[in-house]
Length: 250
Image (cartoon, rainbow, N blue to C red):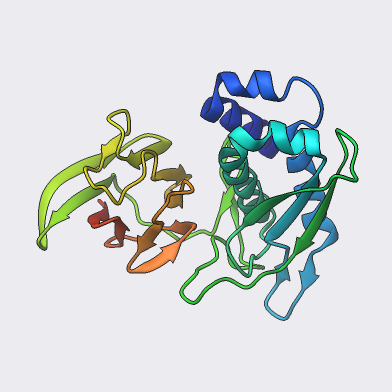
């Protein structure tokens, strides 16, 4: 399955050598991702406006597995939350709130065993779902996801650093994933103490662009509303710490 392959590839790239060492034995993260997709299917609810699926997943893990996941838990949560988003988008299902994955230790479980509690948790005011339920979707060859047609305009994409209301510097958004953060290795380096080292990324999905918060400390805002993932339109303003980046097409 494309979603699971993408998940494992991203996780290996995120935590590098720790991946092979921590997940050599016992519970493997792919088992958790697979369970999420099964719970989405089992827990979908048909409403007036379309099909809604759980967005909150609580995993209870054995003590040995909980301990092994401790060093990678933040990255693992973030990538599992991407599985929720990708699974919903691929099937045209709706989310009532941002994806959330949590872990709890359960001393009664044996190593390798786990349980999952899936639920629908409404998002905060201003949160916008990445896909409206029941909306027609257009497949993107090779991307493993789908996007609503007409959600973007043609032309190259850019991010413009704004300073006191004026454009200070413009960055081209040309890659499939453009990273934004404090580290020099990021594609768009933000010299802002309120920004995380790897704060957010801009993903190209077909002809559309989506901003995705990477579990940052202070969050990512689009037009002053905090988001986990949000499709971008021409003129949207992304706020990271005290830094404002204006997204443009064409």
